[in-house]
Image (tube, rainbow, N blue to C red; front, top):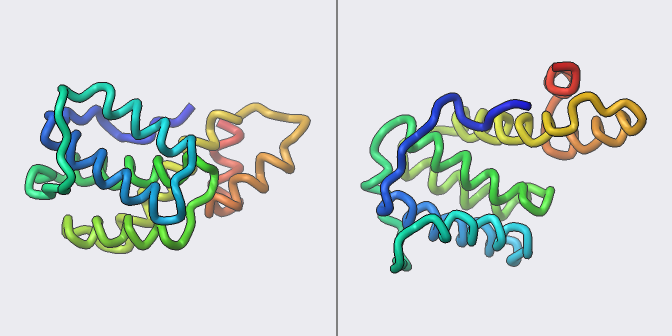
Length: 150
C-alpha cells in the first residue's frame, strides 16, 4: 500500500484548524457528502476544543506543510470517489495562495489517487473495474499498472 505523504509532517493545532476549515470549503464546493464530512470530523476530533471560521495560511509555512495541506484537501475531495471541477478549483486556489503551481496540484492529485488505488492492489477478478476506477481518478494506465502490480 502506498503512502500519501513522503514523510510524516508535524502539524500544530493552528495548522489543524486552518486545514479543517479549508477541508470544509472543499467539501461544500460540490455539496457536502457524508464521507467527506466524516473524514473532516475525524481530523477535527484530534484537535483541542475550539474552532476558527477563517483559514490562516500563514501557519502553513514549510514545503512539507504545504504539501500535506494540499494533499489533505485532495483526500477530502476523493472521499466521495469523485474529484469535481468545483473541488479542484478550491484546491487550486489554496495552492496558489501557498505559492504552489499547477504542477504541484497535479502531483498531489496523482499521489493521493495512487495511494487510494493501492488499497486494491492484488485484485484479480475485478481488475477491469479497478482499472476503470483508477482512470476515473485521473491516473494514466502506466501508473495504474504500477500501483496494482506493486
